[in-house]
Amino acid sequence: MQKIAAGPVTDDELKISKRGFIGPVPAHLLHQIPNRQHLRADEFTGRFARRPDYWKTYRSQMEAIGQDDVLRVAKKYLTPNKLVVLAVGQKTSSCSVTRITR
Image 1 (cartoon, rainbow, N blue to C red):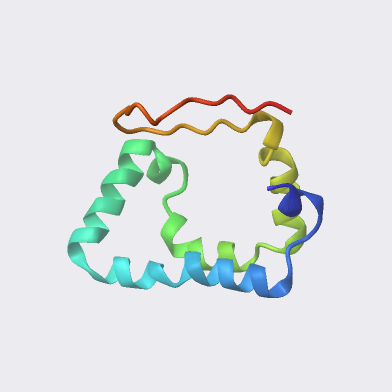
Image 2 (image 1 turned 90 degrees about the vertical axis):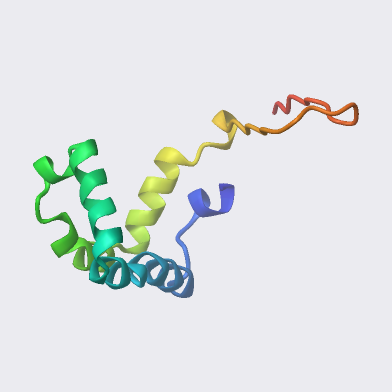
């Protein structure tokens, strides 16, 4: 988190990340059932009311993201001093809770 917020990501990192977000979109929009799930989620969250063209412009919006955008958002939201880690599971005798502070 500190590395991403400290300086721009590389061209390769940005390309790989974009590919991960853009690549799956056509597949899920081509199938009827997943498409319905996305439409329900859009309706439930209010995204359709705010941006009815969201999925039509998704690819171009993702492709427009640049290194400066990633750095700006990372500096705003990736704050290690406010990081909270939540572990969920069955507590055992060998399990302990540790608070890490800086």
